Length: 292
Image (cartoon, rainbow, N blue to C red; front, side, top):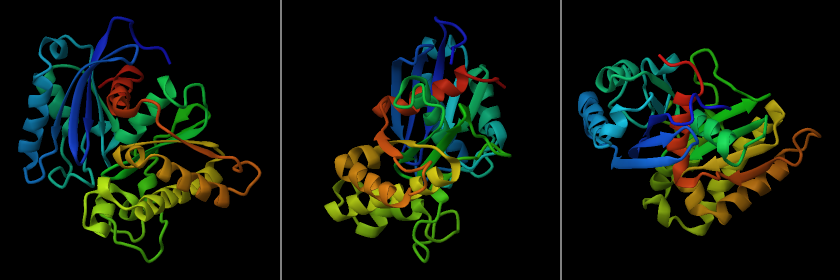
């Protein structure tokens, strides 16, 4: 991938169920400045938007002089983020995010799913650089994914391809926010872990950490068997916070379930960009592709 210009910067925006992060990112993927605020839980749609743009405004002249705005946001959404309805942000249902941000920032705005944005980042300068077939996943408040096949990020009819969080891993399991039963998001996300344990995900016991990795590995195996890919790059506060216990359990489950010649040997690795990944991904959304 080649960015539009070596000196250009973009405003990067990461919208999640727990936090809103904004930053200035260079065309080389370097995060030059950032702000982070908790996602308001009880706000209405406009109050939530006001919190977001206040954080952007704190970036000052660097934001006003940027080339564009790139956004990674939880889904689902309509194509290009014309409207967004993140499962983990109840205040936004069919919220016209692209038009509202464009009006506020007076810049071109491009929006994609946050996990697809992460896939762009890891394929650009991260753990999947140079790899033409892989899945990138975020295991955090929710669970999402972005899938690259033959060097192309899959979009789907409305831009929602890669919603791996809604692969069924526990038939008869918990009801998911999407309305289905047994989704990996309903069983292994930060929200699910808090519900299961009654405690914050960060203090979950070893058996919960291992189960979380096992269920995510089960979802990865399904994708690898379906799409003929051999690499999964996983980020997010839960996956990276649980570390070796999570990744070892995920790899063991993948090894047990990827038994076809083309999927045997599929690996799961931590995202290389760590905390920078979401903002680098949002920047990649702006830098690589048409702007609206």
